[in-house]
Amino acid sequence: MISLTARWVVVDIEGTLTPTSQVHVTLYDYARPRLGPWIDEHGDDPVVAGAVAQIRSLGGLSATATTDELVAVLHGWMDADQKIAPLKTLQGLIWQRGYAIGELTAEFFPDVAKRLREWKAAGLTLAVFSSGSVPGQIAFFSRTTDGDLRELFSAHFDTVNAGPKKEAPSYKAITAALDAVPSETVFLSDVPAELHAAAEAGWQTVGLARPGEPFADADFAPHPALASLEDVEIS
Ligand SMILES: CSCCC(=O)C(=O)COP(=O)(O)O
Ligand SMILES: [Mg+2]
Image (cartoon, rainbow, N blue to C red; front, side):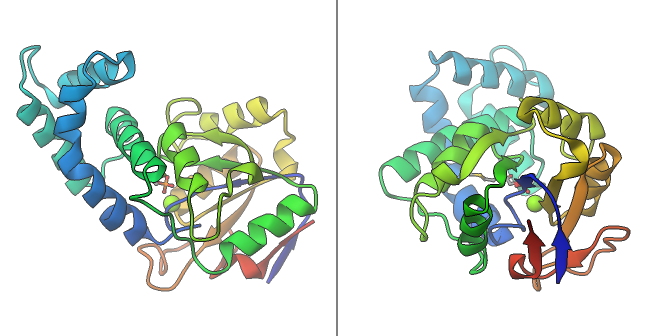
């Protein structure tokens, strides 16, 4: 058990709130066959057109690259779990639709919804910082096995509006956006390198070393590491 004093709580999603399999199996498998059709059907959407331009550039493709070639690059990034912005943008749009039409429902670790509700009720300001795109995050919290959790969060951050999760300036950007005090802000994540970056920005940090998750046996030092949000008291 750890007891902290803070006013702002920023949470990671994968491995912290939800099992990694929820993202890497459920959500990635949902997105995989829909990427090509989405690019073909929404090519006029400026967000999709921008993502396609970025995929061409980052994937070393020509301006005449086919949808199949674009999809092959996207699948390669997913197979390597490379959380690259245009991939996360397209995934987010596909997931947004999946939650809206009831084909997807987010599932959390059993301790999560109760703890987040308690922190919100205690007057803490909650925000999310995840590699998942902001629209994807909001859709994710809209339809969960614990109900619609969107009202819990005052702000959402991703690698586009904040920056890379393993770099301190991203946490400084979030501090500014929240009008927060670094020493009164806590970041909870399952990835030690993300906690190092948050600490470098002056934040308090808590590692989630959940049994069976990829980083369960990682070296979290100097950050405290716990197996459940039940073990984290914030007032
Ligand atoms: C609908 S949110 C999906 C989360 C996601 O796509 C992702 O990559 C999660 O990464 P995180 O930074 O939360 O570990
Ligand atoms: Mg994570």
